[in-house]
Length: 142
Image 1: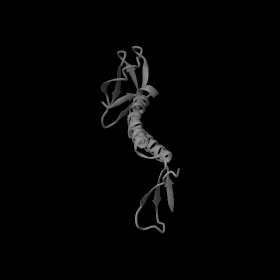
Image 2 (image 1 turned 90 degrees about the vertical axis):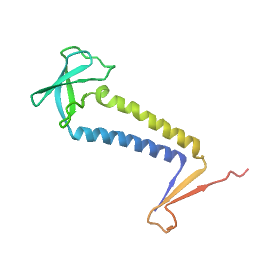
Image 3 (image 1 turned 90 degrees about the horizontal axis):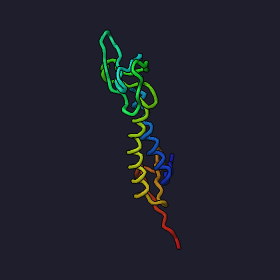
Image 4 (image 1 turned 180 degrees about the vertical axis):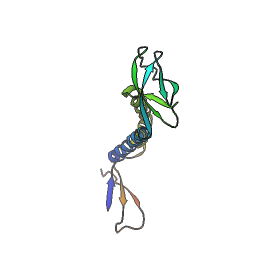
């Protein structure tokens, strides 16, 4: 089986891998997490109870809650101090923002160092047994 990778495919594959890594980490956290209700005790400080013990954590700085407001909380049972408000801005948003950095680095690398005419061929279980990755560059004929 041969797979031809062009510049745009390499770019999109990188974006997909970065996005998949982010979402798999969040899903892994959710699988091992517990959910409960917490209460805002200050504008960004949330308090919740687990195993008859009271925990406090600071929520996202840019989102303010009314004192006494009930909010959904997600936390690791083994480490209840690792808690988040379970909302888009409290749980997902900043991770997405931090994912932009590796996406920009990947895009800059591919756009700067991979030529438009470059094609990469991956061979799997095919007749080519000399190498897994072959690189070919077409020269422009004037």
